[in-house]
Image 1: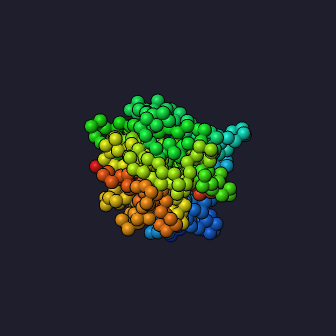
Image 2: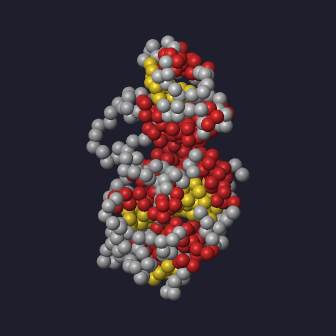
Image 3: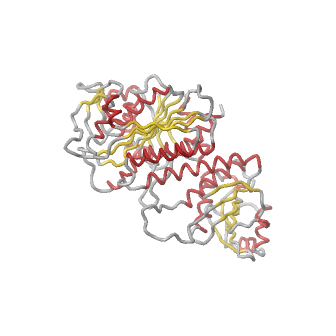
Length: 488
């Protein structure tokens, strides 16, 4: 869906539908009054008759004399309206038209005067929410495309000052859609080679992007023993995908983002239970997130240097698969005792993080659907951020608040490190039941001792159920963080 900015008012809009916001405790504003006139005062009549109260997410569709749909959407109490309210209201508005022939929309939700929000931020959040609500997975469905569910464009009511913010919103929406599309693909399609091919397409699309792919032979030569151990059980060869974006002076040190790319996770020899194993196609959502983040940055041509690294591997049981009890040597030279082959994400990430440091990053961030323990700790509301640094996690959390893609910091205190100590190697790959997310972070921290690094566990936020599938989180948070960084 194309997202643009416009100051065309309802009476002059040629869009198929108009989205008009309304607070439950205020009167119609100028824009809403203009829309009311288009409906022969149906809006004010319905409000007076209490057919519409304006509670958060409530939607009412009316028609103008010309047949234009006008969707009145509730935003609740003005003083209590927040970014979550904007997301909810916009989603309701899109759902009101998504199963109709509507293709073009003028969105006036940002035209209201908000108590605690500026119009540009409202427009940005609303645009991203609209794109998210309009998304539909179609790749492996055998049906003819219909006239419905086909929003092609949305004009956000915003002045020239907010135009750049709308461009950011459009780029973020594209990034989120990229991530959702990759995450939802079945594992027989989205394997390591597919991700490498997708990276090639991105590198070709943008002039200031370049691509490097390490195949299995190159990784063997480099002695990436931890990653290759996980890959041994699969007939799909592993890939290390490196996309570089140069948006500013080449001498400026890059921000490097690493995404866990387990394209399917059986658990290996430590086989997972059969129930819901199909959802393990989402175990590459860390990779999908950095792909989406990278695309968004390239779309808006952000003045920053960015490197995306994806270790893409499939974790399968096989006669040559790695075993519990094995000791492998990582790319860093540190040895790892394997206690559980289902703790494979940290195994591929440790080699990728070591490799990432060769780019001399000013910031290094990895994202991964790493632990079920993270879902227990934070549910599906917040991603978990862990770091030994003071400022970096705060900057990430701040970006999440600004874009309403929330995260929470978990500690990486030294007291947890002893849980991954072992007699037989430099470390073991699991730390037991207690503090499972934190000990996974502790494991990764041993490979990032001299770098400005943070780990983000997205196991609870990257997907939520079979109906929606991949959520596209936390692309918005990551892009907002990089927007903030580029402005420093």
